[in-house]
Figure 1 (cartoon, rainbow, N blue to C red):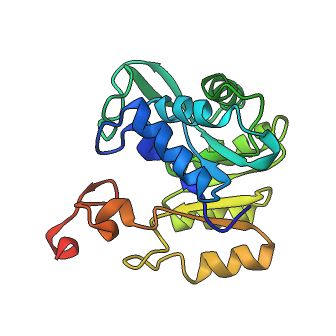
Figure 2: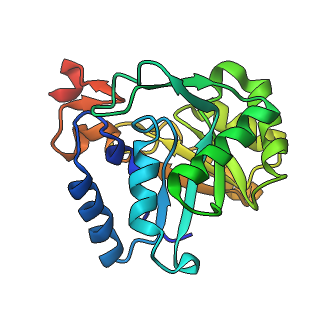
Amino acid sequence: MQRVGFGASALGGLFAEVDDETARATVDSAWDLGVRYFDTAPLYGSGLSEQRLGAALRDRPREEFVLSTKVGRLLRVGEPDAAFFGAPPLAPVFDYSHDGVLRSLEESLERLGLDRVDLVLVHDPEDEMEAGLDALDALREAVPRVGVGTNSVETAVTFIERGGVDAVLIAGRLTLLDHSAERKLLELAYARGIELIVGGVYNSGILAGGTTFNYGDAPAEVAA
C-alpha cells in the first residue's frame, strides 16, 4: 500500500453532483500524479462511485493498483442517502450477514467491472458489532485481505482486539481538528502489525476551505 491514496466518495456526488467527465478526469489526474491506491464503497452515491471508479481503472494494468471497497450495505430500490447528489434511486440497506456481505461483494465487482478487489472493509458496523465481526470470517472465503472502515475509534479498536483484520480505515479521527485516534488506535495497530489507512483527513472539507464537517454543515465553533 502506498502512502497516499484516493478516497472515491466524491465520485458518488458527496455534497455536490459530479458529472461523468469530471469524475473520470479526477481519477486520471490522480493516476498521472502517481496514486495507485483507490478506495470506494456501495454507499457512495448508491453505487455511482464504484461504477465511475471501475470505468476509470479497468483498462489499466491490474497489477499496478490496489483497490478496496466495503460491505455491510446492500443497494435496493428506494431513496438514496441524502448526502449524495445525483445518485440513482437505490437505498443502502444494512446487512452484515454471511450471505449479505458476499452478495455485496459480488454486486460491487459487477459495478466496478473488475474480477477482484485487493481489500474489503466492513463498513460502519457500530450498531451491529457482532454481525460485523462475523462478517470478517465470511469475507475471508472470498478475498485475500479484510478489515474495517469506520469513523469510530472504539469500533476500530474492537476489531483489532478481536483479531482477524489486516487493515483498518479510520475516517476523520486523525486530522488537524480531531486527534482521537492518535494514541490507543495508532499504538495498537502498530503493535499488532495492522495496516492503518487514514481517511477523511480534511474532516469532510472544512480543512480544505469547505463548509462541511463530519458529513454535515460545520458548526459555528468549528467554522470560526
